[in-house]
Image (cartoon, rainbow over all chains, first blue to last red; front, side):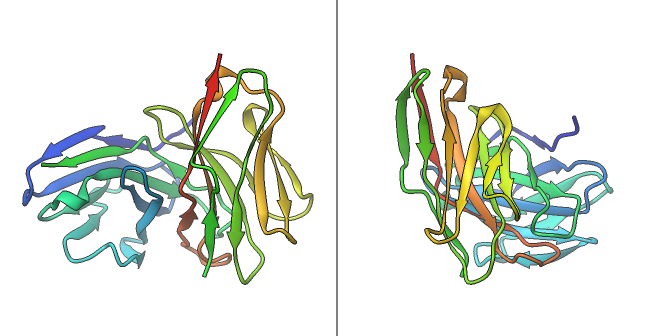
Length: 115
Length: 116
């Protein structure tokens, strides 16, 4: 069964450093998402992406964040200058269809630890 | 605004006992509702979803959920749990029902711990 994959599974970085989290969505899916979950808190939406551009973003997704689909298969989330409060589990998701009824498929997550 | 509340952060239950994980939602329009499960060190996996029609929805691994519009609830149940059901369970709904690229709004999650 096709699945969403994410690398790395765990990333440790120093505050102020740039990190890139990588995702490979399911191959025939068109809609891509990043979510994050700070330890003990809700899973929160960051950004959605369709047709090579951002569709929607939350207030969390500020100028420090960017997304890219560089080569037609990978979908990346970049944090330019990490802060302690960026420490969280980051989930990538993808979806085939255009309706809210369609299932979003999630990757296993990348745990980001900012020291 | 759409929102989801999971009333229990942790639910311990003995093996082979029944379990109910509670989810309440807030929405000004008709909704779709989802339950996801996250096993240790894995991603979120869809358990079941309610779109329309029958209010009792059956999912994978013997789980089912009942949509109750008057109580704005979508509680998840299993009549007899196994050790392997130990996981985090998330209730969610789309931010916009008919939007082409709508994100999901999640509850805080309920950690189900099955005790041998």
